[in-house]
Length: 251
Image (cartoon, rainbow, N blue to C red; front, top):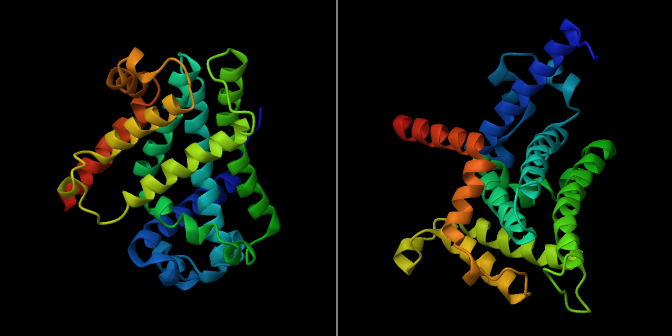
């Protein structure tokens, strides 16, 4: 059994504190507004202490993304292990992605910046490699569901479309829609009552389009999503609802 010393525990706690402050600051002042001086002042430590944990601002932000990506991997694994057909499990993965963006909206909004080559070029190669490995983990988890579906005869892919390419297509569609949801677009005014529900329905339409069985007319989509939320993500949704309630009361 690993026994963590008091000093190691204090180091981890301080690193967590730095990352929490960085996340909050990212939402308040954006990437350009974050400096190591500001981070140090916010946690009431010397700048040298912050540099003991992270070599520069870019390395700190890469570490923050690694922390969030670790959570994404965890959510995807929970979804892929959902007790259901492969179609139901890929639906659960879609719900996991939507949930992730609601739990960590700041990091998701800044993904294009934080994952750009200019950021990784200034961070340590090890951190960037680990971050890339987390993306690969997410792809592997979802691709495994696609491969299982083809093996079971629940999905027949076109000859020129690989399982990974299908996952890329689903990922791209969801990422684009979820990015739009981060904007000030008045969805209700243009006829979309609930953007998340609309995205969930579009995912089902896409799965129908590639012939992933059972087809959406053969089951109740709303009941499926409700079951996924209840059986897989109950604690995460409870945390999200608490955060939303607290934000509303402070607003």
